[in-house]
Length: 255
Image (cartoon, rainbow, N blue to C red; front, side, top):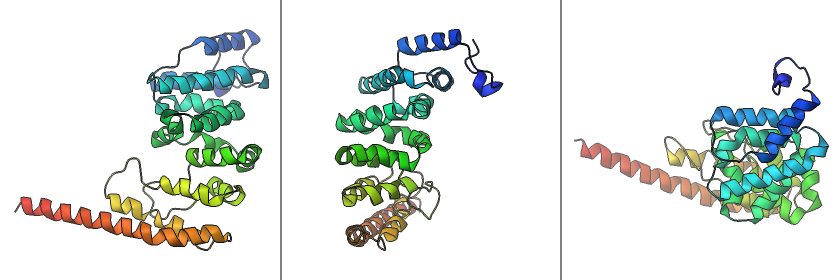
């Protein structure tokens, strides 16, 4: 089959090849696979599932993804290319099921995008901020918080010292009916899930995010940031002291 032709020579696949790909997607079991297999599944989705008439199958795939994660058959980070392709071809299915529905369910669903982001770029980066806001505005009380848990809130990497809010995070804060609720969700994610080196230094990199909000036009947001900054700075200082004490203890043990 030439299911990968669009990525190679640009030749469209035939109807017969598309039918084979759709049949495969309707039947395969979602479980832990190699990175190569994940990439291949992603390409099949991009080639064969790229028509609005396949929305039902896309939603079924999203539902099976959630069930497989819940049943420990797979981890979210094993499915990066698959979810990436679903986001590109059927964004509303991903938003409705893997973002909104997942955020309302058990911890496995709520942490789905956190686990994806741990090792890969967030699939929601493919979606335009205006499209995300339009989707969230349809059910704002549920969808704005769900997006706040899923998106990448900072544009900067863990290695950079100056962190800035992502454009999507700022769009949520500008449009959400309760922006303080949204920034509190972001704030709950400030502690890194994994890191190398100094923990206090990682925490200190979040300080510019709070400083940027202190001048926000929304008084509720600026007041919230002004209240949280001293608390976060104290958290940074406390962890720095702990690290310095441990370093001294290690040095003394070698004397």
